[in-house]
Image 1: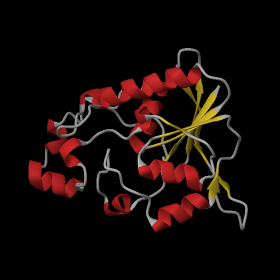
Image 2: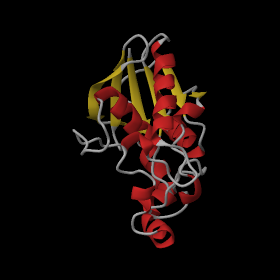
Image 3: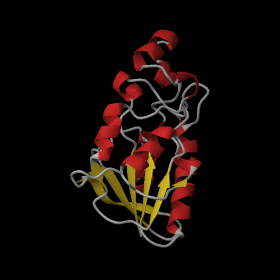
Image 4: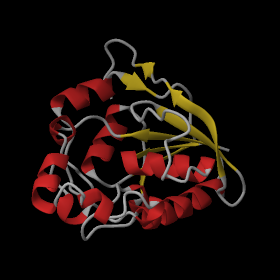
Length: 201
């Protein structure tokens, strides 16, 4: 079966460079308008969504219909760094703040008082396993960290080296899932289709 993973639309915090994590930020007006103009380029039988508002608004704007909310699709929890820009983090915790948090150690990276990348991978892997056990192709509206986690699980990218391919999270990552949820990349950076003129979700 196939699973299409897509990131929520733009928010004001995205535009400002602020880390969102589990903070429940809505889409910006521009983000809503952008997502309302897009559609999935193929039909799916199941739709899953992060329970965070920006993901739920994206699913609605894309006219995906009935969705199942799954907390395993939430963004990585960035703890005390949520709401801050990188420059603010450096000013408060030093220029080596990300290194001290394990940014050069792959899945050991843990934002201050937040969730480790390894913990994120565990919950994304569990989600993939459950989706693979169901019937029909699926889509999931999630977050940057979730798409990166799924890509890592599919490719074996160690995360302490440059990404082996450019992952454009403004587009769609399509995985094929084997029994047990083992993923492989089916399509990288698949474009959305345009919504039909005059139609709203």
